Length: 220
Image (tube, rainbow, N blue to C red; front, side):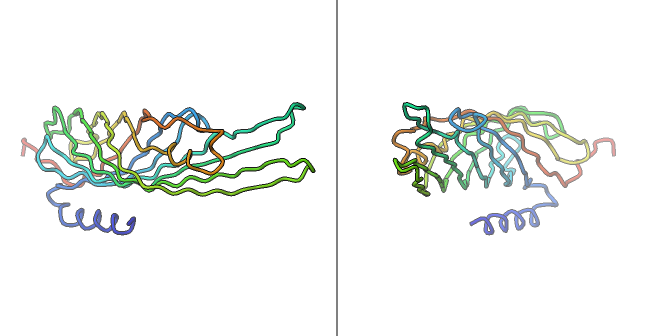
């Protein structure tokens, strides 16, 4: 699926580069979820923005989320660690966003973007469970859980034009993300005692949009 997606990006960019109907973009994001290390997980993304008109700029996006959860443990009466449990989660996501641009004058100035988002995700959770036995030997279990999900999220962005000569821009985005990594983590075999919250999370990100078309100069 990844190769097909990037092939579509290259094809659309090649066809539409003269008219700058399509703008490829790349980006980075981070999402707050307290059960993860540093209370967050990260995302990398790329995709294309397709111009229908200056107010409607739908996007196709491919992204990857990755995070490691805080290690869990249990101790006995002698404060000796008898159980340790480390887990991680990742997801491969394909999103469609009917992006709405407010105040877009197409002159390199800034505008506000409303970003409703439908996402299909393939999620993978991994767990490493270690238990200390009465004879001081250690029993280890390596767990793997896969799931697929559909979700609806929302973003609010501010697009900053970078040049008077082309359509390159930088977009600062606040996300409400409902890709539910926690649900898959909780399905791991030994997660019953270490459940995590599975509600939507807030995040922030930045996208860079590649502009190739030189803008029309009224003075010429």
